[in-house]
Image (cartoon, rainbow, N blue to C red; front, side):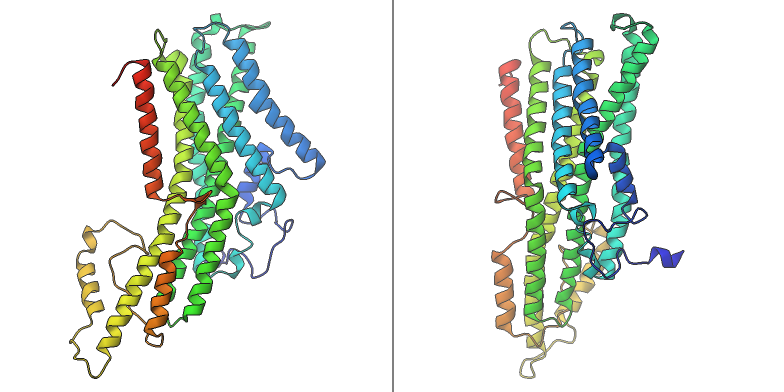
Length: 423
């Protein structure tokens, strides 16, 4: 059992587009893609995928809207809900189908590159694969449970006002089942893309943490530079793949929230749980999916930029140690690095930051063979070539998230000022 858990994620050989096995570490994600029919393998697979998408993401919402929203007081906010969920599902479906058709799931998740990584990265990525699928279930199942309870209650209390054909109970049960299937399909699609983006970012975080260990070893500057360039290249690939999805998803969520705000704050708007309950569930789901993407992008950008401070700290410690080993320079009985780290260990109980790259501990330098000029050149390079997730040239860091929040807050207050007169 222990040998199976410690087995490497991938054997040390390359994988192509079609070499994945049904019982590999991606079986959970493949089963999920099979149920939503996104992986378009062959003509019949593509036909089934498009047919299911059109049925659950387009036809069922259209019929539901025009049949059940037959009066202004019935599901007054249903148009915003259906358009938001269908738009998010269409964007996610296009993103997944294009990536799976072009790269395959293994290459899309950068698993074809993991075979050359260290054992720590492969084992960490294996653990994160399992956690990611559990995270997907934690995101989808509570939303689906709440929607199921709300939908059953909605049909039960409005059974006399819902159009039916033949038997009223059978018609309501069929309509409720189709609406729940449509909700589950559309919600699961955009949550799946968000979780896959988070998983891809986590692999780069593992690489960055493993890269930080080179400063504690006898490494050449050229090797450190090559590794940093490789990580920057991978981050650039991830940015190019997901930049359109992030921008479109951000615009979609913003438009959905402000449309909901305008409709709920307009004069004489009938806002109650019967009409606006589904709108609340839709808004919460979309915002959670957006936060998963933005947090993952900001976290990996923060980790990548922390490399610069880590390298500068390594450079300072190496310079201090070089003076201590100089026979013409008086030395202290204890190293400065050891003294500072002892102080950090005493205050470890008060620290809640588990970031390996952005800590206050000094680095034990092993760079006595590297000249001062080379270390300074490396630090200068890292200062002027910061890596991270970018969207059309804009770095997705914490400052960028603060800017998004302030813009959203400004628009929110402006809409309230126009609708209910808040100044």
